[in-house]
Image 1 (cartoon, one colour):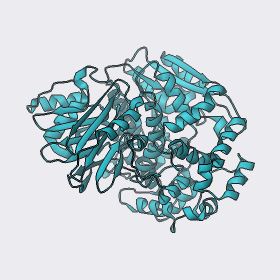
Image 2 (cartoon, helix red, strand yellow):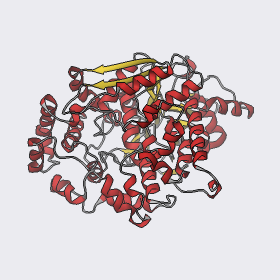
Image 3 (spheres, rainbow, N blue to C red):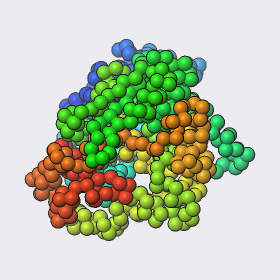
Image 4 (cartoon, one colour):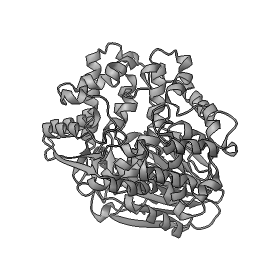
Length: 594
């Protein structure tokens, strides 16, 4: 896990190494163990290293193969790199390191852009070809690793975070009105390739982009999961699905233990992270470090779930770290967490992940997390209402249960200057749901949430907050083979038992029943959900800042009504709507955007 940055010129000039250096400096928290910059004419690549595999200098980046004229920078982990290395050695390739970075380089030599189909892992990479002048950018199937782009007629810049692009200078920071509509509708999700800024785009997941020296580019989309029934599975019983799912997760968890440093687990006490711990214990892991976090209660909401995380830790004999955060640490951490965001993310648990990661990074460099199970296996409460909805009516049914607000309400909240003519979010969902490969309304929603919403909300949240402290988070529920299997499972088996039924039933006898039978929890930060005192004042300060007044995103009367009654207006999913407004302004101000 690291951070990368780079530039490619299209105008005949030399790459701006100083700009790449500035971007890399902004990435220092992602890679505190080393840095490097390489340049050759129109291309420059920079890297910040977090040493996890091959801790020696041989694993440093940018990694150069002078003989073949290739240079690579890479962020992530290829879990099957040892098997690929053995295969490539048998085909005549010679290695000078034991790193997974070099496996990417040799795989590209062997298979070209299709090498990504061989990779089990999370990754974003850039490969520069000396002889052709081409640049190759790649991103993993589920977008676990980010890659942001700032391109104009003269040059392309790219980096692991949006703030790193801003640090390099020259980025168009005007707000994308369509992205703003998505942010206000999709619970802060802005689907790729857009970001909230007109001048920054992101490489979509499961995409390899080949960029020619003159700036022309071609994309290879190399993975599209199907959420439909496979005739080959017709004989599968409910129990067969449970066993297949558990076996696939066993493999995914085992893959994510590959490291030359210890690996811990973020243990919330929910079924997902508890099952990860259980499967690691089943595989013989001992002295496993587990971590959970809790906050003070507020507004009648509990801020911790230590009862369940403690139960799991005791049951499996882990070395458990119970992290209690008092209110004096929470308020200043809000601004720090916002500064770590590549894009504005409204989910109140961002600050929880930020503070948890700070503490966890004192003990380990790598953790596994239960993130992703709810989107893949129908764990959220907006899926059951779609169960009996005809496929032709899926778009409207999904919008009704998931959108934070509909277009008519959005037009009352945003200032007229910031509105777009059409209902852009509904148009986007209509296009996505119309694509083949999703059989039922539930399938269409799960595909959308797994390949789009998950990428730009929970996954991005975990990456940004953990990497702010040089901590690598691995997500076994997003193993692409596990996702492919889950997509084939009949929706009724996922929706059973209040959601994730197939996983819950597979977990009987593996994790304590109390964890399976408990009410679904979350990562609670009550002080943000129930705004009061200094937290409300921070919100008021953001929305009344001169920059906010000048920008004028929101209808002033509507914002004033929400400030006067800060905890009543909720989004469809129950989030604090005032926090959504304030978070966007806080992020824009923190990024220095006027």
